[in-house]
Length: 125
Image 1: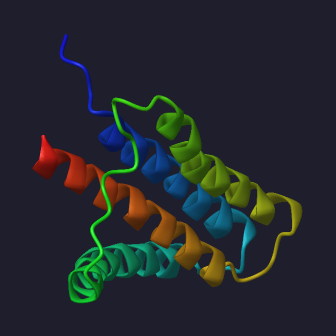
Image 2 (image 1 turned 60 degrees about the horizontal axis):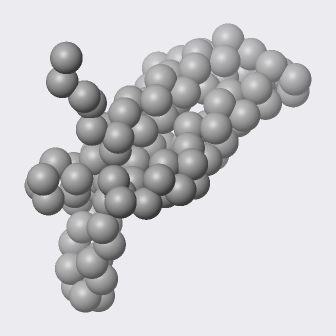
């Protein structure tokens, strides 16, 4: 069995946590927000990845992927992203009836960071 690349696994777990956030915000948030939240996440992620690459190129920044095979501690630090998205998925359960659009945008940006890291790892190796 071929091993899955750690940065791709990080993006997948963050994406699953983001789906959980969308579901809890749709169920416990304001009525009629399910489609709005899904559209917001898609727009944020699709816009973040190329715009962030453009700004990094313009500023001269070159960041490596988040998880490095040589440093095992990077995997532990990178696990903060899915953990924070899962913790934010609990907020609509405890405080129902609000609009969680900003929370969805923030989690979408975190997911975009992990997707960008998976893309960089794929291009590097």
